[in-house]
View 1 (cartoon, rainbow, N blue to C red):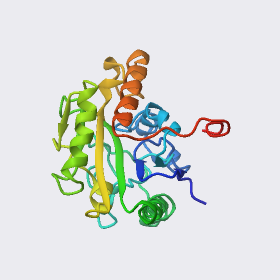
View 2: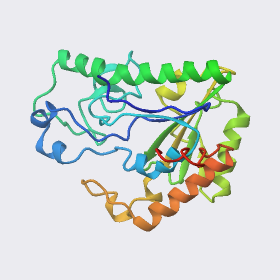
View 3: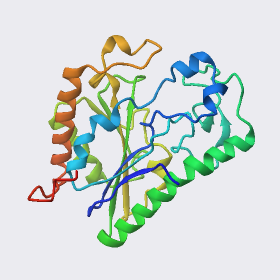
Length: 265
């Protein structure tokens, strides 16, 4: 049974959350080093909560509750199965190049993780894209992430240097963020990962990666400490409001709130 969470709406917009989960497997509890079990960096902290307003809009959403350290769904199946954080499906090290396993998973376990957690995400995403293309003729796939460094901008938009979406759609998103006074850049370090690249189909699927800086909603003093960071409550809700206005600027409609329309979120 798949753990993938899907919100299916009558809409050509699909929002993907590949790195927001925090769950680990039961095996990892005794495989990880004590330090890694306590904290694994570079999760897209609180991103599902930050964008929770999307449940009120006519958009499709897909996310996994499991950590990117279980398996990284934003990697190609042709990537290293087990190895470096930056280019492997299952990480041997964290984003600081520190070993995270006291007892490394076997190749059989790595394969099980790919079958159990990786493939269901892509099967579900592909099915959702196909369904919406059949209905609308075109799909807009927006892959949501968060970051700390190496750039200082609030937001980085990535479309693989102009190859995964039209300039018109990219500019529309850029202008929407600018209108909310975000410091936004294009294809600066974060040009778009595997999901953004692999699902783009010219004139059929336009895909964009949105990277939001942690400093927009997380307490600054928490960002360089090896522990789960705490939200800056004031910033968090201010940023959520601004992000909602970005979505509105894209012309995405709210769900029908009359009578039964909004009762079940």
